[in-house]
Length: 514
Ligand SMILES: Cc1cc2nc3c(=O)[nH]c(=O)nc-3n(C[C@H](O)[C@H](O)[C@H](O)COP(=O)(O)OP(=O)(O)OC[C@H]3O[C@@H](n4cnc5c(N)ncnc54)[C@H](O)[C@@H]3O)c2cc1C
Image (cartoon, rainbow, N blue to C red):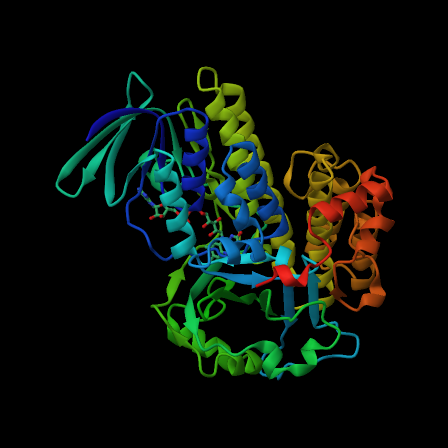
């Protein structure tokens, strides 16, 4: 194949396919190049309210209405029952001590449940990536994107048009010229290697390794620990479940079809995590988690990622850009990967609108991509530093939840400027410096009382979700009364908040839920 395109996107994960669709909607000719073929396994499943809102904005802004049902659990079930996903009502955390059973404490200090949605219909999802990513590729093809799977790119060079990509698809030669190329192949991906881009490690993060796979027959935590249901704002397993222990944490996500995605991220070398034996050895030290996996079977071999965090020193060039997911990755903790990538897709859409003079947009993409991944890295580094201190860990997560819920509310109210342009309110005049102060205290492993106070002070101007209310004992539901009471923080009237809640389906219509 020899052809010229306006845009070449390398990598057909969800981000590559989404950008290819947008490019097509902008009137560009587009080729989407994939090394493998769909359906295929991909890690990274847990969406968030902000991720879903960004997907919704993309669907609206670029005339992609078939994506809209994927933004909420209920509409997804009705529109695409053949594309599997799991139900995510919030973030569930349990803190563990080695070699001791887990038990609920009176003050609930060893748990944290933060609801992200008021009911199932509008809940978030865990994407079953083999089917989700395949669906998006087919959508891209149906819009006219040229899709080349099983294509191995061997070389890249400058060309009169922009860049020239050469390789092979089976026995056939592939020779493509594109005005603009986007690398959506993930960390240490295609352009990073082809251009020999420098890696720029995060300064505060410890080296972290990961070990993960898909399982069947994982027990529900709330089945093993019925006490965990009492006072919970949602069934604790219908969420991203985190088991936190000194030096690392385990995720447990239902992704549909009876499949559970689970794995561990931990300070490299602290545990023997090279393969499935390492997983079993770790569970030996965590008796309650071991019980949850007592009858579990892995459906595929474990994948060991020796070095999870990654940041590229360069993100853009004259005719190319890295997707945020190719430019940097911090950790699965707090599910920052999807929102950072979707924010980047919105920026790259601006680049594609201005292909005749992309420079300012490209520079903006690089600056924002690095700022945002750095911000996520700082918070996650502070969490790693305090994984053995549940009270501090829980308090620090409130920085994330407060910033994320404020951002979502501001955008849903049509006031995105209130949240600024940077992930986790990085431009907010009061929150941003207070956030930094909290992280400094966390790195110093400051006295818990002082640190919790600093966090409550930091989130006060942006808390629209009742997160400052200590009487809730680490169990935060989604209540209209919290948003109404915080309307002034969003420069909104109570009537505006009520109208927004009505638009977003805040009040459950049980008959709508399948
Ligand atoms: C252990 C782990 C857990 C995670 N959990 C979460 C989570 O719960 N929530 C969250 O928000 N984020 C999570 N992330 C991050 C998330 O995985 C990424 O943000 C997301 O997968 C990025 O999607 P993508 O489409 O950009 O890339 P990918 O899904 O990585 O897809 C890249 C595609 O490029 C193809 N490719 C690779 N090299 C080439 C090449 N040379 N030529 C052509 N094609 C190529 C691959 O085959 C693949 O299809 C996690 C990451 C890890 C490592």
